Length: 111
Image (cartoon, rainbow, N blue to C red; front, side, top):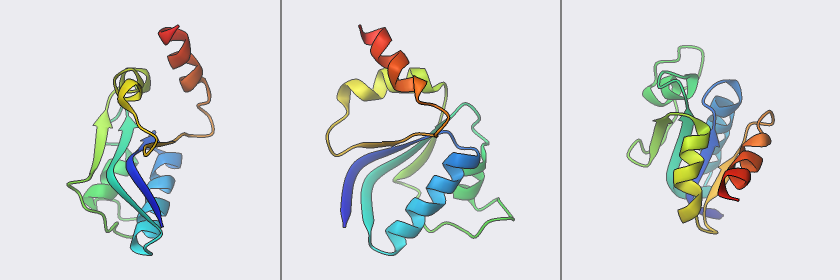
């Protein structure tokens, strides 16, 4: 079993909602646990938010502890500026394959 502190999913659209469903299945199967799951997206009504509320008629309902799962509305760069300095080795980031520049931009800002 994989154990995490915080798992951050970058984006709540197509890729992020797919990752969210995969993590929910893995948790239900006893393969992974986490303390907090955060989906970061500019749109507070993104597909991942609808999945978490059970408002997506095209998808099976997710069985997640809503107290430990949240959609964090905002810009990814702002989120990483606040999150990464306090992140631990138990935390994980699930990036969209289209966003490798986010870590580079964070490092550039820190430098």
